[in-house]
Length: 250
Image 1 (cartoon, rainbow, N blue to C red):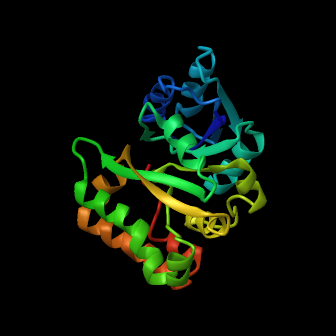
Image 2: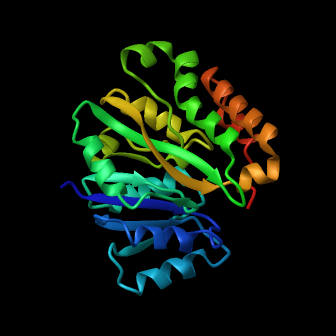
């Protein structure tokens, strides 16, 4: 079986990270390694990561420090240090199924598939079904509307970070990884590059991410912002402009 490295970019994830790392400790089969790349947290994020590192769990937790809080840069740093055949990029507030590794390796055993992700459910005190449904459908309608030739001929799909993106390490490095100059939509840029290597698919399985952004904005505002960002990106609007819609809520 191919080995899988899980890379988690963090910034002030103290309220969520322990739960995510506990989830990863019960994967069966296990990941080969978990790499936490911190962007300069000022809460308990690094302390939590170190506490899991000291437990000598399987997989082993590694901790890297990024020179700046830049998610694309952090994920690239993790990828450079990773030893697995496959890279899986996971947010610090996301929970995955315990058969994650089997799902990933089985999917990428198909040489026509270059990249995959999951259906993301936003959860907190409740599950945000409407927002989650919209974000899942956006994987299909955004490329259909704005990159129709790629959608039809390359089967291009647009994945986002909370969908737990995974790909072969060789393909990731060959296409240059994430563009660290982008303030937002770095996952979309990666998908654009990886679709030249093969199909991008959304698995019919779910992961759970924190609904904290939707809880702050409200359902209608959240959907409107997500739709606006995707649409403006498709029309070529600068990432610096798009970032104004998506300020950090932590």
